[in-house]
Image (tube, rainbow over all chains, first blue to last red; front, side, top):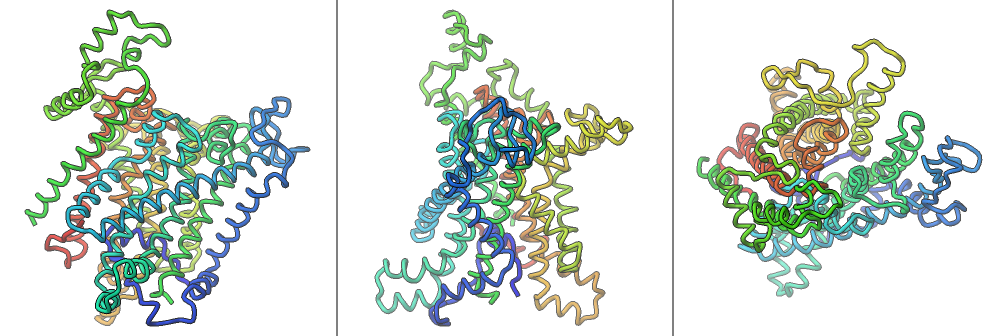
Length: 309
Length: 331
């Protein structure tokens, strides 16, 4: 029975880092550790639902050209304010006549790009910084950790606003800003778990056998510490997609004509009283993606955590 | 313990210094001309004499390092500077907006803790019940909808719609504005203004707290000390509250402390949606106006508050978990 354990890595990281004792998969030696993870993941119904939803969204984004003949972000004032299920516009149109069905499909591309690339940037920086901090220790570690403290103490939305007013809004800026401001938690989680694994017997054994540093890091330490990073990054992707909406609401997110789900939600709020579908259509798409990311993240955490086997 | 507190307090200094330095640099490279902002000429050319006078007064022509030094010199003497846009002292703006934000935040945290923890405990001890399912669905929803959407839906459902339907006065809530009169700082004479912003601001945090409480409650329920407590013959109520909850709350308290940064972010949005005269709304408008002194001054307060509250959170572990009562080293 898969127990849903949300925010577990969060908890551990916050109380000063005691991630679950990584079991030595090599010694326990299941036939294939990867297959094992997948088997456990598969048993988690919510996680599978999330995965299916994400796959569907990705397919919609990839095949948007085939699923609609409309052009994304195309203004057509003759067709403005069409309601749901109106002829030619299954999901209606917005205030200036953009077809919501088309925009939601193409918006999936933008929202996924924002989530994935911001996640990629955050994870890369987080892994490098966290690893350096944990391996080198001493003053390097403490100055890096102080720096993350500084960034964490600043509300991200505030720096994002400031940066975006400097470099100008747009999809690329949103990705950069979210990625550059999202790595701190990942770095801390990784650092905490490396510090633990460093002290384990199997690392000591590898060292005693005269394994070079590189081998110890890549063969023994990273495979056993990367799990919380994967989980965290999945959850961060959902959060990044949501943040795009917040930035768009403040007017510094993705800019038209590019459709992004958060941007569409932010636009739809103006018509909430008379044409609620303009808000709800993109908002539901956005919520499904965010929820799916959370489900998959939780599922991965349970599947990667051998303690719950 | 005292040594630990002092060490932690000293660590506040580099964090505040670093945070403000980052913001200072950001604002120094922000395009846009504070002089035009001050002379109030949107688009029109500012007379050269006026420009020089203003630049002289605010030291805008000095090299960045001199401006930076000046900034700290006056900040450390308690002078937060003057707003470029309104020419009012930042401390005045702070005095107006800080209490309003603090009130909203205190109420939001109050809701987060009371409702969040109760919902989490309930769904943990009645696992897989209807209440548990409802909590799971609601927390998933609250965590996946942008805050401003919640705000607008709340305004629509509790303000605009009842108004259109001509419902009686008590059944509709105002959708904008800040209460003017407060009793004992926290209790507005007109509650109806506080209700929606408070609930919307608390929504995400409440969801997180509920989820976290449920998880940790389930985790501690398997602990040996819970079995011991039951074996001692304590009442179930005592077992859950004194032995279970108290241990389960440690990560929850940490979450609340760290979630403060998110709370501040959400406050910027919530205050903008509800036109609440607080620091969040002020910071958002000031960033757009490139009003650096206001942004820096208000952020200083936010950063200090954030760091100090997290210090309090760390110290509170001792209350919840006696094992860490002797100054725990935390990186």
